Amino acid sequence: MFIYIRQKIGTTLLALWGVASLVFFLFTILPGDPAQMMLDQNEDSNQLEVIKTKFGFDLPITEQYFHYLNDLLPISIHSTDSTKFGHYDPNIYNGWEIFNSEKSVLVIKAPYFRTSYQKRGKPITEIINETLPNTVLLAVSSMIIAIIFGFIFGIIATLNKDTWIDHFLQLFSTLGMSIPSFFSAILFSWFFGYVLHKFTGLNMTGSLYELDDYGNVYHLQWKNLILPSFVLGIRPLAVIIQLLRSNLLDVLTEDYIRTAYAKGLSRFQVLFKHAIKNALNPVITAISGWFASLLAGAVFVEYIFGWKGLGKEIVEALNQLDIPVVMGAVLTIAFFFIIINIVVDFIYAYLDPRIKTL
Image (cartoon, rainbow, N blue to C red; front, top):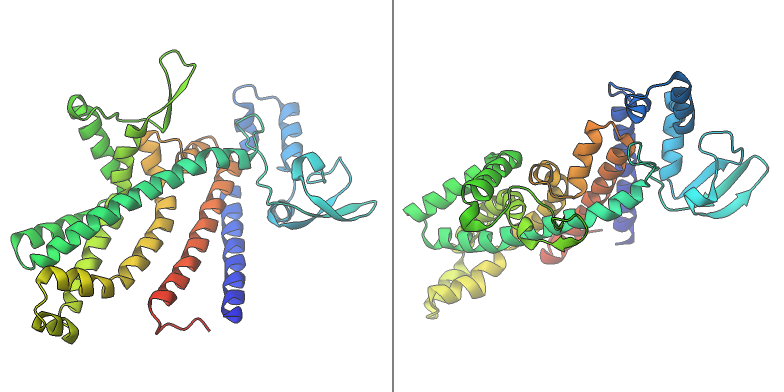
């Protein structure tokens, strides 16, 4: 078990390094000048040079890459020269000094995602703390909807095998897996938030907290969670229907199921006491994996519905070339994705004793 955990930690660190490197070089070579975007229409050559020096845009790309990884690492080394980019500032890094010399300092700190280019130097960690809970709430709500309706429809499809009900549910699940989430979001927003607004009372766009008409007080609006949750939950819902139906049909052909029928158990008792339990392994694994995917898949759904989450923040940051926000958000999502997948491996090993973790 220790070797397995050590391997997982090594794989996680390697994957995070790969994501960080890919994100850095991808957004560094993007067309456009972040310094000019920060100045907007008030471009001045002197101010432009000051901004480039302040944010390290004038450094070679390899040196920028080193400073970027140095900021992300929990143990980092910084210059003590305040005139150099990336010098150690206790108010910024908020770390513990391990070693201090005249020219450099070695510190232990939390990963530093830097500050926003467009939001007046607002720390990226603060932006993530404000938006990530909304994205997690949306992902959890979507998965709850997918689990509830996926199990109901999956069982109904199994009990009505090869009937029109089964064919309809299979068609529904196929469409659910094939239609992109952003397209479903546009349809749901228009149909339920505009066409049927008088009957549903739902809005085309809106977040969890909305300002009142006077712009003074934020009010909790749970109804704004309904449409994006259903849209984001359609694809995992379709997967659960297909997986549960397929596995239940396989389990129902086993010898112990025939034995249960021979003992006089009803179809309902056989299904819920014996069959479902043994058909859950791949379904639970899919549920866990899809929850990680929903964090990344919420980007366009949040933007279309105006849901103030991490995904909407990414789209807006891309439009403004606010690269630190994009990089910090992508790394955060990647970290959660990797951690959840590791947890899934342990869950699957626990559910299936045939799988060895050594």
